[in-house]
Length: 383
Image 1: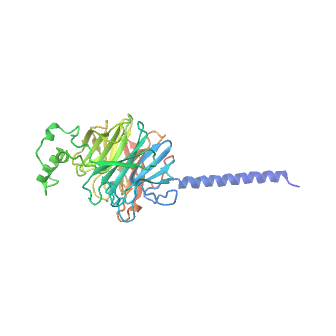
Image 2 (image 1 turned 180 degrees about the vertical axis):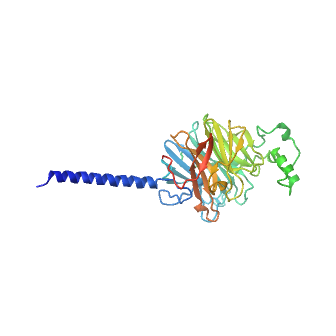
Image 3 (image 1 turned 90 degrees about the horizontal axis):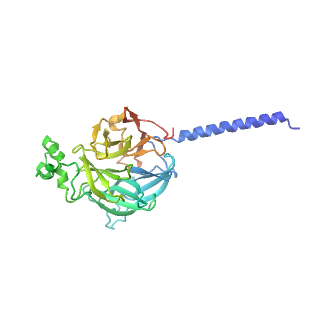
């Protein structure tokens, strides 16, 4: 004969044990569901995510992370641009190569072995196209080409079709370059061996390199994209031998430049721009130019995308703040569905083993209306 009380007690005990196990399971899941800056970040196959210098597109409930595919031995492009997808910004599915470089000997601008950096993708509502821009250097030419590359797809994960590469705004003056500076006679050759002098800084500010590159278009290296609330899109890039940032308006289909652009802090030596808008103010975080080595971040803000832009102090606080936590900015992501929530994305480069470069993602905090970055060993965007 079965004792009803014993059966009931057993049922309660089993329920409590199961509940306890479920709590432990979720605690384990929550503990593992963390962003851990600087650590290996495995994708769904268990392989470290290979999407460096990247940016993120959010579409229909899914985040798409695009970045440079790095090999173990070179930072040149041997495969192309990778794409990963996620719904929680922590667990990422490898979607494969979104933009594939062309075979060696093809003569394409994006031939295998070119330098293809900092790809960013935005969605165009008018054309229903996904538009990718990136910094491109032609194979075997070092960093002398300084071009913007364009590719387009019907789907977020690709494949993307390479369209063209060029230097932006050929034959067009910056909107904020005074007329009197457009006809000055100083030339770059006048200052060979005389760089970083007061006179040299003055002529850089007056547009020496803008005039030099006027006919062929302005240099375009480290870059990002930004779509404003009115759906206007902007290409922000390091120009003038990395001495000056340009903000250039894109056409309505996001596939060309309109010719409207401005210069920011001529001679300031800024690269790695990352931009976002918070409560009507535009913020941009950049780095200095020290090659693969990290340096102190810079921050700028403006009431309009066209300026005027004002420089503020380093937004990083705490240990290693002067080295941006040993990283360099690449993108700032507004978190979908969470007002005033942004993620600072940066890369910790490892030039001797490029594929092992790490990702530094940190939440942006605000103090006195200004962005602040503090190191966190681990964190969750949902907590």
